[in-house]
Image (cartoon, rainbow, N blue to C red; front, side):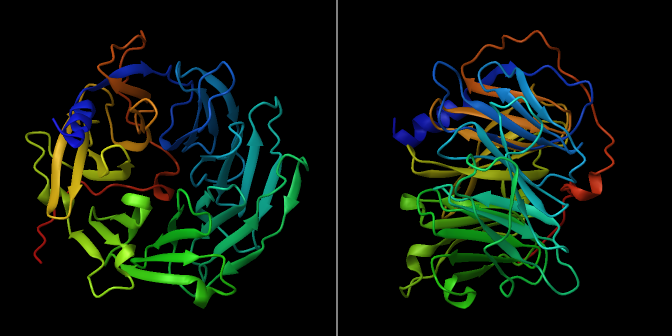
Length: 389
């Protein structure tokens, strides 16, 4: 059996290991991130951004709630732990700030606030792999949309200080900047995606935006998710709001070879998911051991589809059933123990492990939540469109 086959078999064998106790106020779980380093003698942490404008921190192994940071700061746009300090967690918000909390502290107060410009409404952000730079993307205001950058050094040294931006990129997108993702190992590289359909790769070590723009790829649709993949992470992929998929090889930029590895207009029509159907895509992750990119999608009733990517097309690897009861909004893959965390519109946070037996007594909740921020978060179009190339 090849390494890829073993990995796909492991993915197909994922079962629920833990199910968190639902909160008193059920919310959509919009984004999930885990701390990279385990605390001494403890398990990694999980941070979740919720549709009620709160950020929750859990113990990864038990899914016990440890901290909750309240709303009043606007709609949250993602959540990220620092790479070099597992107690620092960041989130951007629609009121034009990125905040950083230290989960070791009992206070609700952030240890650092990165402030944008007065008109900024942040809907995406990321932290560089060196933790030196924070970058956030804005909604389009009038004719402008911005990538805003801050120096993130010294976060723990100056409690509750406010940092002003280092600068902005303003010329490369002409609509809402929906996703930002720094390179996993090269802190100077960042990719951004927008509702204008463009996916831009920048080298932020360059002196100006024109020089920094390494590549512009066109997804032909509004970008919903993106990331890096491939050996040395030289590939970029994205998903679109109408469930399309694009995959490019940046290693071919200086050659005569085409950079497009795969472009699927509608994944729902190209992946046969047996009787379950495929209603939407959530995102992707690169499995280093297998050297393979996988996508995660699902159904409106909570089934999760794991999809394998090859240059000749997409194929269904496995379907995880019996966990969620509504649309899955977020996930986080952990390569260290081959586990998967998922969050959904049913307010459930689930931990999946190969061959696990569920140890939680919490029964599956059939919650379909009416949220006042539905319009601000991604709404999946579950109707199958007939699209011809």
